[in-house]
Length: 88
Image 1 (cartoon, one colour):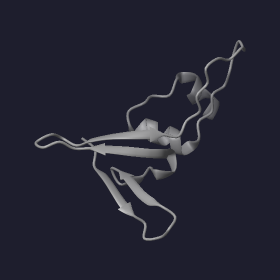
Image 2 (cartoon, rainbow, N blue to C red):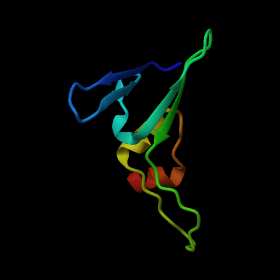
Image 3 (cartoon, helix red, strand yellow):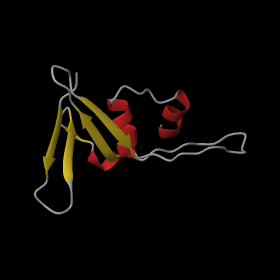
């Protein structure tokens, strides 16, 4: 189970959202927290991403912002092998 900290930055700019000590706010559009009596809290993250319905190309290179990639990896995502080669 991950540790989540949500704190007001004290400025008008925004909120710090830390997942296991790392601020993930730059990779998010928003979040929803739900809690029930005697239930584990549930946190739904709205990750900044681009939705594409259709591409008419044989090959496409998908680039994620570093903050989004780092958050997805922290949440357990393994980038495809081709992504590792492109970063190399």
